[in-house]
Length: 73
Image 1: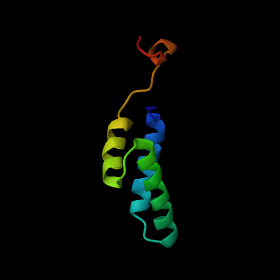
Image 2: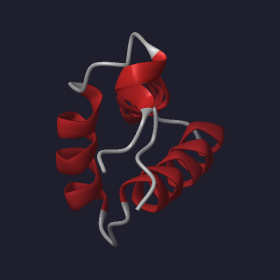
Image 3: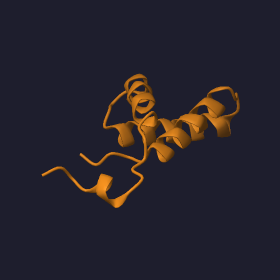
Image 4: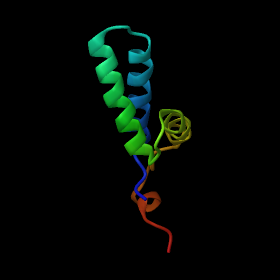
């Protein structure tokens, strides 16, 4: 499975948190879209599972060299 960039995951989590505090039709619609994207990104089927998985993924470090990006043999 491809792992999403921690930067992307952090951005989705921040957007979700921002939208969850808003109470407008537009915010609810966008929250639904962000929730779907989180589920797809984390390969989960519920927003609760997606948020838990995303929190773990967001803590990952980005590779700092090409050597670190190479798959283990």
